[in-house]
Image 1 (tube, rainbow, N blue to C red):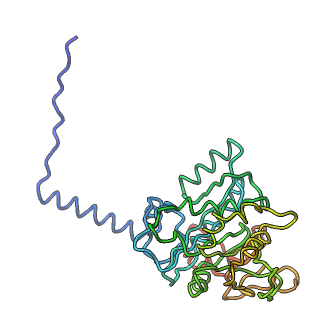
Image 2 (image 1 turned 45 degrees about the horizontal axis):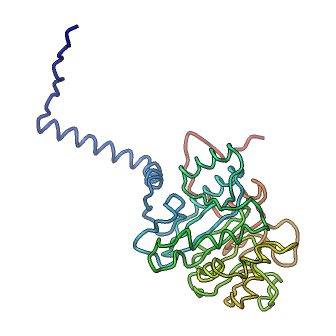
Image 3 (image 1 turned 60 degrees about the vertical axis):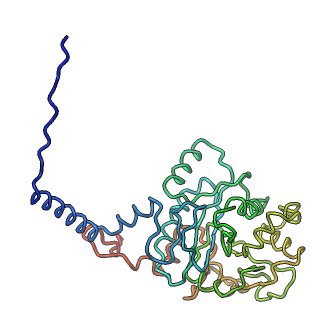
Length: 332
């Protein structure tokens, strides 16, 4: 059979005026799309690993090792303790932090969801999808637990995870451990902590209530912060390594015991009443109604509590009218 020799397709050449018209049309289309759908452009930029132009945003979409240049004045890592199967809670938290209003402090705040090792094929696939989509998952080498060493594994792993990412500078100024039923207002946190010491710092909601001088006290596990030098100390010291958990105490009490035994964490800051539990019934002093200068609210155990909290802090204030919805007319 003879081989067919087909002529090469002819590509019509555009004259100068036609080419200019085509280019102008493309630019006009892009401009209109950008004006009508600004969020689409922002989302694609974030997914691609770019930094948004606003100065302070939870940078969940960035490579956790590659910190941006130039360095901000303040760097904070928030590790939210959760479990692999809590997909819905993680999605809610991503939305809640992404939609927080613009902030004014020149800071970088990275949020990571902290898990122990995966145990099922379902988790392996679904968590992998989260990692590909958001890049905000940190999986520790441990069995999932609350008070049996996860906190030690988290803090002790960080210096190695971020080694060399910022040259000789610390990867972060402060590191927080937080529960996934805690809502942190990032601007309030940054404005508060930026004026605090960057060494030997231990900050949170202190127990016994309003008694920061009590040597046997501790910061509650809802959310507490350590300066980076204490994180490095945890990674190299035998005190926490030999006492990863102490029955019957919670991880927050155990961490306080490490600092006490080493005479560390002397720069203590009690954030009462700005960090508190969601108010349901009177408690000694760490549960009350919402207040405007809140840093963190704890014990948001269900969607109703989350909805009331996020509404109080105006997370839906940017919702624009549309023919596609009317969420303010509820069905009876």
